[in-house]
Amino acid sequence: MSYTPITAAAVLAATAATLTYAALSAESQLFGPTLIAPQDPTQLALTYDDGPNPSATPQLLELLARHNIRATFFVIGNFVRQCPALTREVAAAGHLIGNHTMTHPWLAWQSSARIRAELADTNALLEDTLGTAIHYFRAPHGARRPAVLRIAAELNLIPVQWNLIVSDWNTPEPATLHTRITCGIARNQRKGHATNLVLHDGGHTALDQPRLPTVAATRLLLDGPEGSNRNFVTIDAWDSSKSNAKITNPL
Image (cartoon, rainbow, N blue to C red):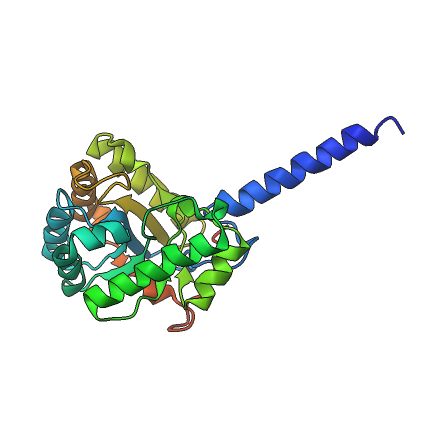
């Protein structure tokens, strides 16, 4: 049949597209459930990845304290090892700390042994540094495959994704970031969902990455009407094992 090669190619292309979506789409649940956000448009979780970062995290902590807001910080183990006191300062301020691996690899393409080492070693380091267990992790770039979620579950880690990301690692103007944030919050509200916002207080390549635009954008958010009219939560408020919230795909 002359159409067989074309049909086979189409099937392969569709399969590849589905697997790519499952591995890289923040809101996909095809490989297994991840914590994103519940159906409560009044709630907003500020989450910060890739710290701790001496060049930005202290300023962010001061800002959040001034507004009496708790956030969630997904930290990189190598930076925790270099900045244990700053990591403890984040926790002492009441913020939730999660696992963002030791070295920030694309986990979806790593061996099972590497995945386990990245997560388990970071857990051990954080628990030694903070004296408390770690329950949440965010995969770098959101990249995962079934083995990533299986190993996380074996380590008693709940995978956390997001439904709003604004590319703040490209260091655009704070006003531009603020516009992206407020538009994204409004979009999630129209869907009837809370917002799980990813920002970055650090950069995975090295310490002292320039993240003050992110701090300034956070300040614009908290000082504006979106800040005063929002119920800020940490992502453990959405953990179905601890509350009535659901691990859900907000589509």
